[in-house]
Length: 297
Image 1 (cartoon, rainbow, N blue to C red):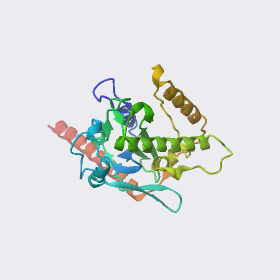
Image 2 (cartoon, one colour):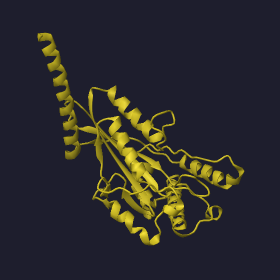
Image 3 (cartoon, rainbow, N blue to C red):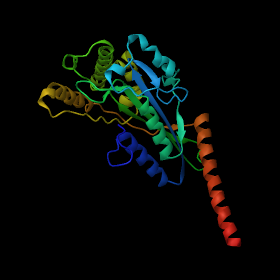
Image 4 (tube, rainbow, N blue to C red):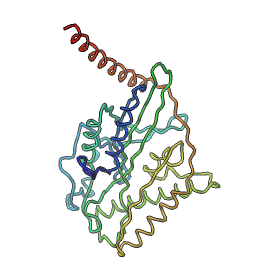
């Protein structure tokens, strides 16, 4: 999802951030506020990857470096655990997940790299860089025209799902096996939600079966536009996984959502927009002041 930030091998997340800031530069009539957060779901527990208070002391790159069952408490000590709260109108709030306001592309890239460095990744018999967790990079964009009382607000979830690997092919045991079970189970619950959304006659959507589907509730069947990229293998030995992935993507294509603009009036976001507008006006004043001084000289 990240790739190399310096060349054409950039991943989806940096390309999205680049597109976003380029688009903002072309719309000077609006004031924008950009906030980002990075969430990891490891063994069905959410962690804030941008928790600056603590960072992982090492990069997990090999199976033997992953924490054993008795050492899983280290993750709880290093990173804030995320919990879900639902308000009276049904909106979800993620407690302990921090959103950082970014003013430019460099700030956003810095946070992205910080979160990537804190992820749990290992090499397995099936994948040399296997994600042992699901990760969600969230971007919240608020836009307001000068003099307007309301602002438009949009949220983008960029989700990197851990791959579903057949346990019997990987020959894994212990903690790695436990991780694989959590990954496969959460992907199964995600598929259940997608199948239910594709059937108009189904009344109940099982969002609450897993943390992943709970967080993505408003990005799957709500006021949203969802795109899924399915990665497959050309090797015959992976035919079973490839067919399963294609069927999963086919089910996703059956979901129909109807979009509408989000207009809100919120004190915190309003303050962020006003601060951004104030900063922009200060920069304009500096430029005009320099021009006046040069003119008088």
